[in-house]
Image: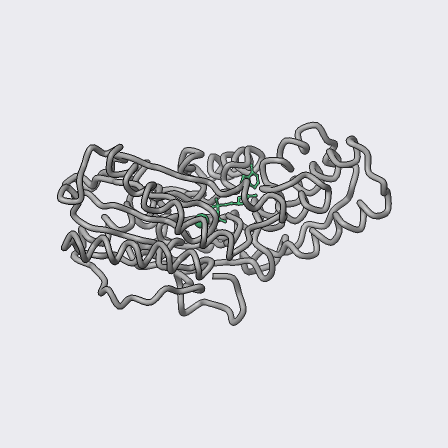
Length: 351
Ligand code: KG4
Ligand code: ZN
């Protein structure tokens, strides 16, 4: 079974063809990602209107490249999937509408995929792991700990009560003049810095629910930076190192707690999976590796190109759903917010 997947929820225009083999394993036949980073860099963040227009301009050609890369025409596809949310609504509308049109024209099943579900299921594509597993999803828009029980079955254990972790990296980068996207830039600077020079807070650490909070930490970085302004190269490196160390401590404390809670309900997870753009951060990865090792649970971190937003994860989530006989109607509405665990969604919390 081969599925075309389309991703346009943020600032990547992406399409991919993924094959699901009868034994449940997956194979990526093509994976085309066009990043709009340069278009947004001047603004220090993604500008929704610029993003939607760029998706409109690029999507046809990205889909054509994905099909070509897989050596297939639309007749060789068994389904068309698009991320229907959560995300920037303009971009979501572009990808979803295009996917519906392609599915309709080619007379193939259409699948409306939750972008978060796609991140959550990527580890089954790359590593073929079984349910249930614990997932830490950390990106520019999301920071969640989830029990992944099956396709379409997720229980949220924890979430951020304010900013997402990637968003905090981006804001710290902006405030220190490091440009956008901030995560990789902060990580690079942090390597040269002293994480002990500034005593930044470890928000939420020790709290009985595995939630996160980034707003206070971000403010603490700003206050320290203002105190010592104008900041030197050395100061910037130390501020980045201190910030990153605080984030890692928070992530490890919260993840350790989530692991305990998971085991109480489900027993041993098949894996501890980390996904989303922040999973590219080596300090975060190294910390999680130690945590998982101590718990004797395999850590599964998708390869870097599958950590950030991409079409393969959408295609794979579509394939998993299609294999279970699920499909969606062409009336499926785009969703700016779409929590994986609707029951646990906090009012106003980030989906
Ligand atoms: O998953 P993703 O590509 O897009 C969504 O937000 O859905 O994640 C992008 C986020 C950005 O906030 C970026 O700064 C962050 O992931 N990020 C990083 C690193 N690479 C990307 N954060 C920390 N360290 C990194 N190396
Ligand atoms: Zn994402």
